[in-house]
Length: 183
Image 1 (cartoon, rainbow, N blue to C red):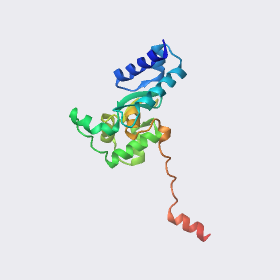
Image 2 (image 1 turned 180 degrees about the horizontal axis):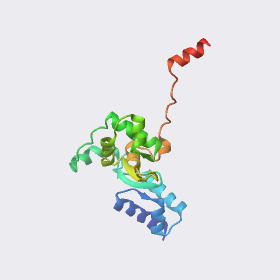
Image 3 (image 1 turned 135 degrees about the horizontal axis):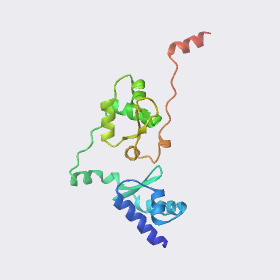
Image 4 (image 1 turned 180 degrees about the vertical axis):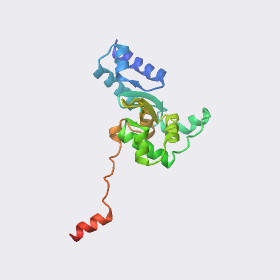
């Protein structure tokens, strides 16, 4: 297939899918090598991601997705009569941060760090599409494992978890610093 037709096919796949599509699925469907697919995807992103374009193509880890330019989110929300999502609670932000930086994690791990039950918060994050089940841990009771989603990356406007800011280093308590200064 010639490049123009491959471009059109990839564009159609992204448009029709609605969800993120992996490069591997695109290469398999179009019988295409990965470097060529990535090059075509990058060309499409360059064309679509103009500041005033209504649609953007975003890269989320090893997947690509067509989505609305955030500049036009409000008119789209109005025409589709969508409610604006309420902001995350402090507990939701804490649980999301724990999952993002330590995934895959169990509910027990999150509760150990936070010191409180997080069933409701995990349910809320799952229903918002920010966290998903990632299988089960091979331990007695086989607890569920949780990880972040492509929706999480999209909300933070990042393409991979490696773009998350580093975790700040824990500072020593004031008493330890004073002891060191006096010694």
